Structure formats: structure tokens, C-alpha cells
Image (cartoon, rainbow, N blue to C red; front, side, top):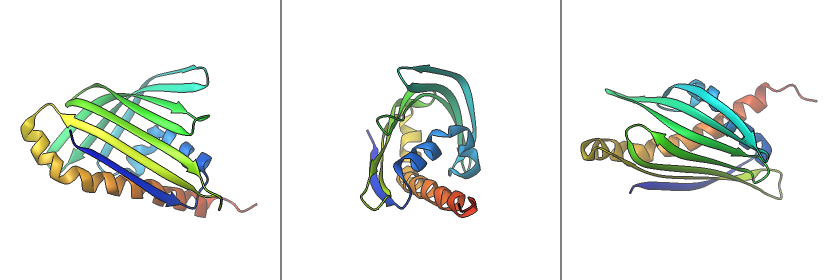
Length: 153
């Protein structure tokens, strides 16, 4: 199964980055390939917010929609994504936000996936690592842009 993992040091706090990644409804504004995102259900238990969401992605002639369960665990500084339905055979995604002494954080991004269709896997496989790298960069750029717009106190 293809997988991609990266750790990016960023100048923003773990909470800032957690909040940014947790705000999945805004993904179509800045996440590469994300055309729409609809939150179908939201629940909370033991401090963990769980969202059921449909994400539509597009790249050139390819359009797919898939459903995931997103667990927002602020206390653990982690966001876990589990596959529910769509074109994948398997999809697991994790974000972890680790504090650094300088006030910034290390953002760890992990994704493990496999498409049901071998043809689609071959087509998408060549593109997806580049897309995941751009996706990680997009979150950092979004945090920078939001910080620049924030009123200084």
C-alpha cells in the first residue's frame, strides 16, 4: 500500500496548527485538489470530537468523493482520519502536533492508502506523493497567511 510520511517544523504553536487542520470545512479554500467538503455528522465523547465528512477531490479529469471519520483529539494534539466509503480499499491518515522549545511545533503527517482500482492506483500513485507534499505545505502557508491577518495585540 502506498504511504507518505513527513514532519515539518513550523513557527506556529501546536494549538494553532491543530485548530487549522481541524477546521475541515475550510479545506476547499486552500487544500490542493479539495473541491468540496460536507460535514454530515458531529459528535463528542470524552473530549474527542468525531466528524463524519464527505470530501470531493479532483485532478484533471479525475473526480472522486469519499467519506471519512475524523477524530479531533485536542488533548493528544492529534487528528486521526479513518476511511468509511468511496474509491479506496484502505485509507488511514494522522496528524500529530509536537511542541518545540522555540514556541513552534513539528507537524507530523502520515497517510496510508490504496485505491480499489489498480488502474486508478497506477494513475494516481504517480501524482499523490507530490500532492501530499503540497498539501502539507498548504497548511503551513495557510497558518502564515492567517497569522499575518491577525490583529497584533
